[in-house]
Amino acid sequence: MFENLFAERGFSIDRMKALIDVAQAGSISKAVRGDPVRQSQYSRQIKELEEFFGIQLTRKKGKVLTLTTAGEELVKIASEYFSTLEEFKTACKNIPRRFTIGAGDSIHHWIISPILAKIGLEKKPWLFALKNLRNNDVAEMLHTMDIDFGILRKNLITADILKYKTIQRVRYALYVPKVMISKGKEKDYQWCLKNIPCATLAFDSSFSNMLKNACIDDGYELKISLETQSFPFASEMLKSKSYMAILPEMSEKFLPSGLVKIQPPFFKVLERDIVLAWNPRLLAVRPSAKEVIDYFIKNLPA
Image: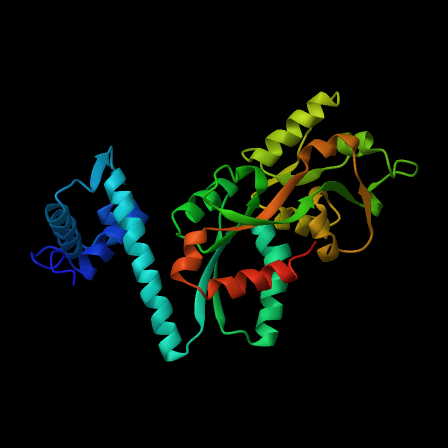
């Protein structure tokens, strides 16, 4: 069996691992972290794979090494093969299974962390690695199976490749420390936005661009005093009582007391559904992942 595959030299697990490492890093030098000996080894191993299969697997695009279509297919096949072997090994040795979850910082803080705390208390036989990613990167890494699960905006699930379960509708509000609001202005969002320093996600994000445009459509220009890289950091600034913050409602049970919640009508356009998503190929190579998916679906906030 498989005589043709092993009839000639050039194919090995080490060579396949080298190709995967380089594909994930984007270049041979990054994959080997500047080690000249390993760089020469990886270059030779990838060349030997190309000779073995008789096809080009990588190409240079500027200073970046990219995969050809054949290279992408081979990396996918090899990754699934290694995942299956890892699943078999963990089952044989009865050791915890490791899963990687990709999501934004706010999702990790406010949705995933409470579930992980429950998993820890219940002593489930799972290990987790969390990757802080933008929504577009979550979708891409689910397709390539560089992560096992992801939580992202539903509108980014554009192909039939991924499976998903809708978690909740994310809505946004303005949270203002009571001490910063003048008497009689408790529900006057326009006054608050014009007169109180505001913290929210930085203006290089899709959310902030939507927010800015929504404000313009409502008749005025939004002025942000503090641009943050994550909603959790913006929520931390509320504790100083020096800023109000525009945040998703999922943050509420983690916020301090003494806040006024205001929902401007134009915040409606910011709403979006978020989903738990996975690649169905994951279940083929790692059947134990289904139990984890079912657990998350059962315990995710509605």
